[in-house]
Length: 192
Image 1 (spheres, rainbow, N blue to C red):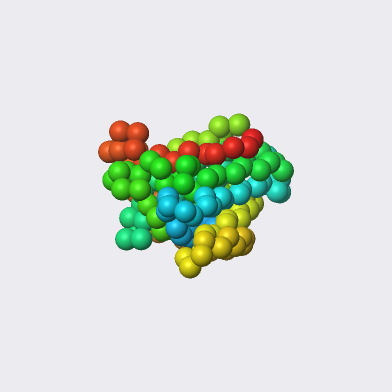
Image 2 (cartoon, rainbow, N blue to C red):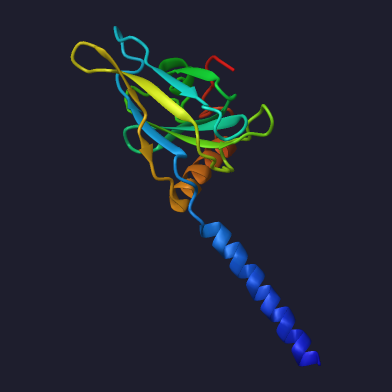
């Protein structure tokens, strides 16, 4: 009887561990990651670029746009999380909101930003250090072109958010929030 009980307990423990392992490696849903670039930010004579984020409401409520900003050396410079209500529009300035508070103190001119669509806590957003990817957020960005500062605008393309990339974004953002003493935290612009 003791062996059977021990066998049942071990089997249940293994099943629980397998369930947790599967959850930890389950890829995030599609349509959760947007990737784009910025150029000529904080450049004399160049206009400011903008990033516009909306929530089409298909997730059934408010969402957060977890934003991660990278410099040209692929180092995370800033991160933040911005609430977007259903059918709401949030507008971020590249110069003021995404590149004005870099972790290293070096103001960025060119780089990349990533936006992860994630669950909100009511009308607030948790730090972008613990994501619950939820499909829906849409984004567009203006780009300041090099030769004559011509402005173009495009939709921010979708990319596949892997478990590895999700973990990397969260971990690097934790380091910024832990070590930055307020530096490296972007701001959420206007709207909502």
